[in-house]
Amino acid sequence: MKKLFGLLLASILLLSCSGTENTKDIEGKFTGDFNYGNFSDNISFEIDKDSTAWRVSFSSLEQNAIQIPARNVVSIGDSINFILQSDQYTYTFKNKWHAKEASLTGSLTVDTLTVNYNLKKELDAEAHKVQSQDIVFQSNGLLLSGTIWKPGNANNKALVFVTSSGPGDRSGSRAEAIYFAQKGYTTFHYDKRGTGISQGDWYTATMDELVMDDVNAIKYFTKKTNIPISQIGIKGSSQGATKVPKILGELEELRFGIAVSCPGSSLLESDLNYWKNRNREILGDNLEAASLFQKQVFQHIAGTVSRADLEKSIQTKKSAPWFSSVWVPNLDEITIDEKLLFNPLPYFEKIKQPVLIIQGMADEIIPPNSHKLISVALEKANNEDFKLVILKGANHSMHHTGKTDFPYWAKLHDDYLDSMASWLEMIRD
Image (cartoon, rainbow, N blue to C red; front, side):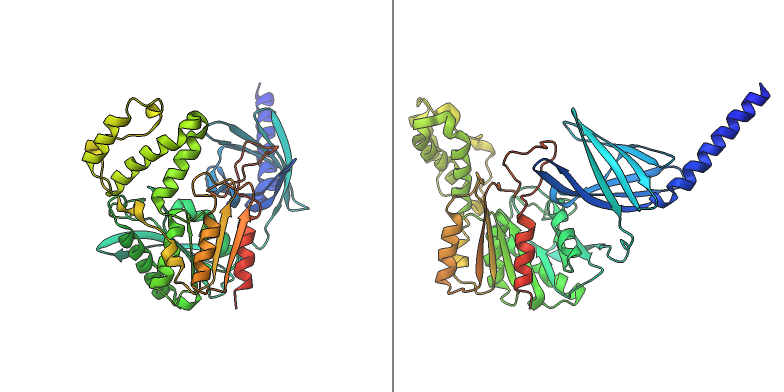
């Protein structure tokens, strides 16, 4: 029995030592392309070990997935395996370390599909690593929190992400902030008032107040980094995009603006367009009649139709066959939101700075002719330095909507990030 126990203990020690020897160089960042059929994505693993266990995080900029912690990490010998869990799927990763090539060969199994990949270790990862700094600044009596991303190869130019609609915090722009920092830009994004850990209330704020938060963020950023405003550009999406021309007008020294998924209309008209698209098939020939009433509801929320007039319209229309399909909130709980009346076109008609307009042709939210209307407005401004990029198959959030051979990951349209990076390179000097 003692001899058997001794052999067993020796075997355990041998396995333990072998695992330590073979895996000590696995620590680091591994990057490569994941391909399956018409799907392609650049993914990375960051692997390290503390005193008790191995840790792995997964990143994909095009999925807005940044350092997602893996679960059930197991390392034996030259292998390291782990899983990622989403609401719908379990992603099982199995990897083998190759010291000579400084690479991982692995496989991902999800649902009934297994896909192989090869990732190379970034031997100079630390030299190009992006550093982050969390900050707090004041705006209109509120403390707002944000993050500055500092590149290892800074080009003394910067990009500030202005806030968008709803309760989303800075995490929504984190992937792009890191992407452009990796390209040399110092980037900055922050939690809109009332989101994340910023003070205030975004819903009751006026558009002017939200714009001034962006302006104050830029002023704080330029002082903090010593990058002049003339070397700073701004980028906004959706409601954030509508603020871009107004901010460029407020700070005429700003170098450029990027407006993505920007409606060429008021926010109310854009919301109504989305409502029409969502209900077109259900309502059929009744769509126009129903949309006229739905517009009245939106106008009441915006403060341009009284409650009495809306209630009268409800009494008149409630017997219509389409009435059950329209949205009527509890009128006692409505808070007037004048932001719905904001229209960016008058501001586009005044700006002179370079502007990039990006619109996806699968966008169900903004009016489909928005890019044309914005182009006309910029021509009225005699702006000769703007560009339109139309992305077929991109939706409002710039994700690809076409057929994919790997439906388990949603990713950005293939040309979205490149279109911004190439344009910035073109206007860089």
